[in-house]
Image (cartoon, rainbow, N blue to C red):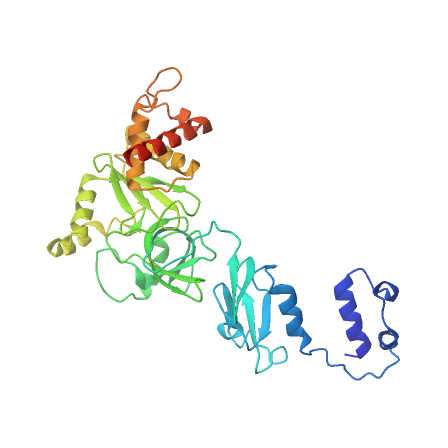
Length: 383
């Protein structure tokens, strides 16, 4: 490329509306180059000023999008929400003419603001309502893709899709064996797109951008007989137990660390089995696996869930929405306390609305705010 063409490309990139040398105030030397009066020898445009431009313009809390080059240098280290050319497939992405041997390209993997601490470059996510996975988190995910690489892709309310591998689930029948080609062919029969999964974070890699899940426990698996409620991040705290039972163990609520909440009706024998599992009754584990694992991938809900049980589930959905509306951290104690308050709540007409199954009144923002205030006051009185 000639020197004149290089100058033309730079000016066009900066302006985008055509080249007008009077608008740019070009020097006489630049005009001579632009008028092709100089030699056609290439001018080295890749000087040390490239790093300075990136540093001055981007390392100052500016917005950046996924795939953007943050900096090209060998003096900086990548932090969270970033990746380098070394993380990519060299035969596809690495280019010898665009990258020197002593330089490392650091890219952004999310939408956010660049943060620089000494020599550490990271991207702070601007969307604080996204889940940041930690190993051991009990979460709820929704399958969005079944890949040909023996794995499922799940939405976990995070920056990227999480991975559930075929080797990370229990097979029907409770058999512990290596997965074969037939199991791979049956993947879409086990878990389909749209299915909700109760699972645990097994591993977090590549600066939290690659999350691996597993369901190798009787406490995890496919979710049925209930409804999903999503709340904003920060309303569910990490605790030892995220599965709770209410209303004489007829209602099960899973408070996912990713702020996905599952509310379902629970059979009495299912509760007993879960209690035994949590107590580590080893003599019954094999029998429980054989009895239940044939059903864990079924798409059919329990036909015995009648209208009364569905209304009961709806009541707990309302409770979760009231807590979320008032920005209150959702806990087992608050759910129980708010349920008792709803039982005794009377509308303006003096009706005990929740007992008469008139649940629509609790969608009123004023009623939701009133109940939230009463809950906070009762907590203050109890100390």
